[in-house]
Amino acid sequence: MTSKPRYDGHADWYDGFFSQFAAANAAELTDLLGPGSGYCLDLGCGTGLYLSAIAATGRTVVGIDASADQLRVARGRLAGQQPPRPALLHGDGAALPFADGSFQTVAAIWISTDVDDFGSVLTEAVRVLRPGGLFVCYGAHPCFNGPHAQLRDDGSVVVHPNYRVSGWHRRSPWWTVGRVRDRVGMRHHPLAELLGAFIHGGLQIERIAEFGSNPVPNTLAVVARKPPPAG
Ligand SMILES: C[S@@+](CC[C@H](N)C(=O)[O-])C[C@H]1O[C@@H](n2cnc3c(N)ncnc32)[C@H](O)[C@@H]1O
Image (cartoon, rainbow, N blue to C red):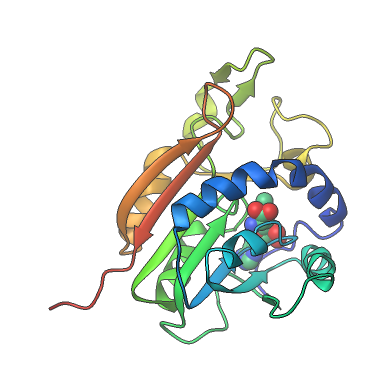
């Protein structure tokens, strides 16, 4: 495992805090995925907040995460469910333990801000997708989330000049003490870099959506496809 398990020690807090947003996120995610079948990889599945929503689309879910602590909470969540339950693996999204073309769908939910190298993770996601397979990325909108984004009580967001500073950020004056970014830091990709990663990864972008309950969106979703075989 080369990636740092930054969420170890934060999993119970993470699950308790973010479960309040799971229903709204799951509804948007379900719309992006649409009905499907076959295997779906929940890449960076965390505490498993979206395993059931993905399974409800008709897909057989496999979750993988770099944090054993996050997976502990995910296993607890599944323990009370009727089989068949999603399989959960401890592993690195940048070195996936699956053969080429194993999955019809890959979902990457709130992970672009947390993986060491999003480009490497995308390369692996594309490798394990079968040709014509669907990739759904749902997560932080990089224009309005990050070390540069100052969220105000009235719903407005002030964007500071460090928007252009790509890379890992451990601290920001705008992050609330005790919240997720204060705990684990954040990888920031300016918008062009984030969208460029899909193009460089060989994915065909089919849909881009901005979500969030405030007038300024906090969520960016990209639906893309691995090109089908020629001819
Ligand atoms: C913000 S959490 C999102 C978890 C879950 N997808 C959700 O939406 O609740 C980011 C997750 O990415 C995981 N992660 C970070 N780097 C990873 C990697 N290289 N491979 C697999 N998981 C990784 C973290 O352990 C963490 O659980």
